[in-house]
Image (tube, rainbow, N blue to C red; front, side, top):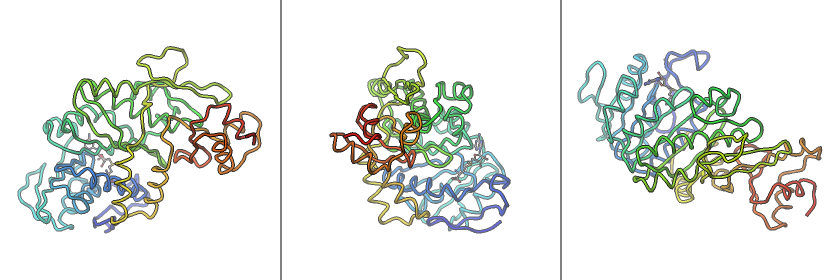
Length: 376
Ligand code: SAM
């Protein structure tokens, strides 16, 4: 074991050559994911939070130490992970209140930490409408935990969901996407944004059956994963409203794409169903940015990434200038020049976190082509 620090937490991690060989999982690259999650929890002010798939406990510990949350549950099915979380809570000043083979309760500076060993679905089924915030950070797809999470969270609570099965959501394994996400994925330059929207669309459809609507607080793609923060809204009308943001995407060989909000696709060769609503709530992201000024962030990339997200035009899909130039035999131009051309034509245009060669704009496809050709 070696001791590491991230944010305000100190904790032991197994010393392994490669992260996936370690008996308990810890990936330092995910510090940005955890930084943003800590800021989100700080802004949302839950009383009770659950880190359902906790591994070393780093995420739950950071919530406990860096936000005002009063009670944090850290759960893992793996016995070594359970034992490591116990040690890590103690390392951060946890005093044991009571314990059994499967559960231990600690006092950490007046806050409650509960460490649990077991299947996340079993725990969430047991704690019906108990948590204000649930974090699902699994290996791969979160789908097998969604139903119980939607039952264990309060009806006006919040969810943080990670998916690391990028290949599935991006269309490399079409059947797997259909099986797990009940959606047809797209390949090519739109795959990451479409994958993110497929994930949100699935949560929205799962939530709707409990008469719950979803509000996207922030959703993004980075490196090998997708991350979504959702606020739940109670009531059949809210569920209907969120289903009205479900629709489909089409793309032809020129790269031109179009989309439409509809429950079933009205034309063939559709990709989806997927979420066509907003990918962020302006107030929420403004609060995250404000908090990030005072917070002790673990990664020096978090702030820059949050700024990129907050400046992005929030419209469905984007134009990859390299891909479109390639499809039309055009010369590749600088993004700044293309964005300037579009602005001169009266449209909005920004960079996007989905790709360094892409722009988001409210201009139609033909106008984007003109801007790429240098016509104004
Ligand atoms: N959240 C952690 C972090 O930020 O470092 C990483 C979690 S790791 C990706 C996923 C964890 O889920 C593993 O430790 C694994 O043992 C645990 N796990 C897998 N299936 C589970 C289940 N059904 N119930 C509870 N834990 C499970």
